[in-house]
Image (tube, rainbow, N blue to C red):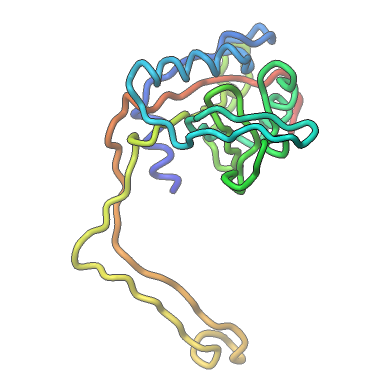
Length: 201
């Protein structure tokens, strides 16, 4: 997972956030940055992952556009919250949560945001010495996995008698062969940003 993450970050083109207000380069994320990345991927004929979510009659909810996915650091969650009312819609406020992913934090225009503590961060590398966050936005045809012949799936189970001291722990694993591949790097963009506030997390 981390190898593929780093490969995508190194292979894809970068866009520095410029719509933020912190005076750094790149700036913190602004809604215009999301619009710019989505426009770039649209221009490159990237496919969106989701077809959108209709609005509902529930109080405080709203519709969600057809969207690309963006992987961002959990450290940026407060920055996303600060965009509420400017284009950010929290995942809890979707018209329906049926298609929301477990790590989905919300959406801005045509981008649905997934957060992870494993998202790439370059520490103290901005123009003002702040952390730079790689927000990777992908279209559906950007990456794939390839099942390889000759490596059939194996379920490995060893009961506690064979797996652990004092016969307390069992082993359960799945083994299979596959590889990941970048299929179209024009359907990926790294949106580089800093945080709105450089407070230590």
